[in-house]
Image 1 (spheres, rainbow over the protein chains, first blue to last red):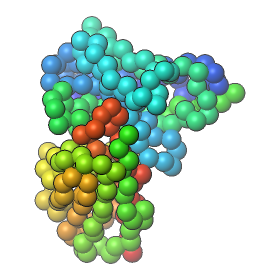
Image 2 (cartoon, rainbow over the protein chains, first blue to last red):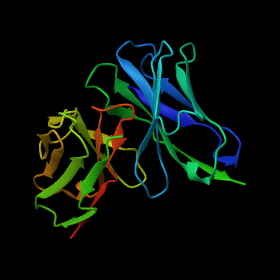
Image 3 (cartoon, each protein chain N blue to C red):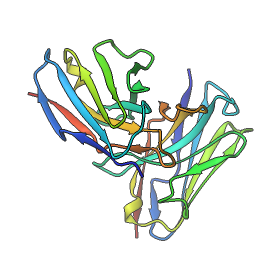
Length: 122
Length: 108
């Protein structure tokens, strides 16, 4: 059974870089059938897609965050990572990693991690 | 971006009754619409994709309908575990894929 597990610091200082990793177990991240993504949810609010990556390194980003976001993949460790630069309090959120199909009409997320809360504070 | 608007924000329904949740897109998304359920303190769970296809393991009391810009999630007979927040997501016009703001389904 595929499992995704987010990890990283729970507290980041304002203007610094947020870094998270999603470890994938129970299946290869290098499967050609899937993209791997990050989604965030500010406390008490809705869901916002951050970006997605293919095992080859191809990425798609939310234009609203693209200037500050980098997603990378490490197939040898079966994990992918998120970096968000120059964070502010508005970046405080529960961050989820998730899987979606790599086909047209497949951009829904069928497997999710449990999420990790990141608080941005000075 | 395609804006997804869900209504109502809060829906109060008694157990055993039917719940109908709506999702409207700001532009045509075809059938590229998913529904998720989020229990308190948990990650979202995929319920429906392709507007009307139930995901693996989802009970038949959940059904989705609609196309274009108007969509509905119906829960035919509410069970206690169904009281949660529900989100719709369009994935036709991307990037970005976008979510609605959610409907909270509460016990009446």
